[in-house]
Image (tube, rainbow, N blue to C red; front, side):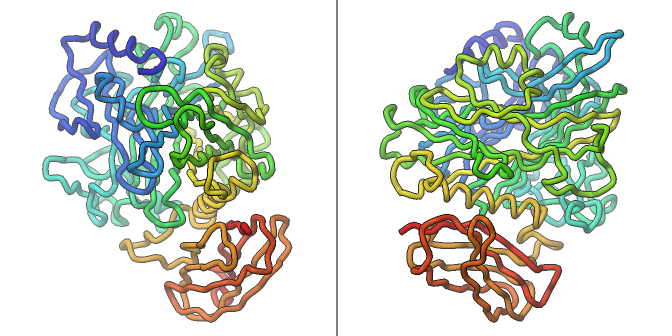
Length: 555
């Protein structure tokens, strides 16, 4: 087991042998039956995704892609934290989690406080499952309510569980018919999770929405003296809501979107807040540790609007010939603030150019863990970017800020993971031409998030897609031809444009379309190798006017 996790597990077992931890994983699907206060150990629920081409573990304490450390090491050695493609032995992440830092005035002093949901140096998680409305403690009679919810285990119309042994309904419900309203709001009172109280129905967007909630209020799980933490002003009293989206659609099956609501539940104004994600990207063959020490990572500064870090593996630790490609970590959404740094509330949604964006990106080796996490606030707030790291056991730390959170304020942040094969078909080399498939996936995800607000084929009543959308481009990279499959919500004409990376139109085709699914083939023999944008304009319906995706040509 890696980086001290055995020590953590033994400490838990020795200190709390009279108490039982119930964990629901792929290995253990025990129902929630106990009714007791769980004071010093976590109420843990680890679930492995079952949809999309990405296999990833989600927990209800804030860690992602991390194995259940309460299980014996022999049971977890072949449990994937995150593998791609699904069913393979190619592991890409050992563990990841969120980081939050803020300045808080406490007893006349302004202190820099922070918490994390995954420390890559030792696997520690400072967050616990549950809602602050229930109190700062953890109650095991709430273990079913605070499970990790999978949307495909609930009725899409009524929100009721499909499993007769489960009593609590889906937690997210539509509040209005706007695109953002369809993403849903968390319903705290489980008795109100029904159509009587929420007539618009449950909010279910992707092939598998995964929802969980967690909080920072249990100081006994932090690292350090609880007394010292309290003297500094901990806890910050932050409530988190995480919804993860996974898709079976061809254009989106190789991505994971993690959307966080960060809610200040305290009576304090938290200033100069920074929110980030740390990811221990280990590209290695699943099994005993070995292949994590030869990875490479770079910031994709060629297009800084993508907020993207790219990691790939060396080939001298068993990766050669195993089909490893690339993983992209990107900041997808960040807060928008006014001129004084407070969360803006004048609009429903803010475009990327209105947001804070990616301010900090640190690519660092395992040897720097102690320095980074002992001074986490300053590292989150450093406002600088690393450009490249090679042949190391690598961590990726990305952060946005600063922003102020008044009591009851909510900040929204979203991150995206993308996976792609090399363009060459061989071993990854990290060159810009070789990451074109990854860039296509990243741009597809951004198009989905910003142009459709995650609303793709799921509409009212879960009907098929009524939006203009590009479903598939293949082969990608193209050689002599490019096939396009797209949806259009009406009969009529559309214009398909091919643009280079600086926006010059190098090809244009007018096609007659029918409502719903369409296909078209473009001869690319006369185009040079490179990366291009394909843009479709709906000439009949201005509200569904443009859809854009990235593709590449390789000859």
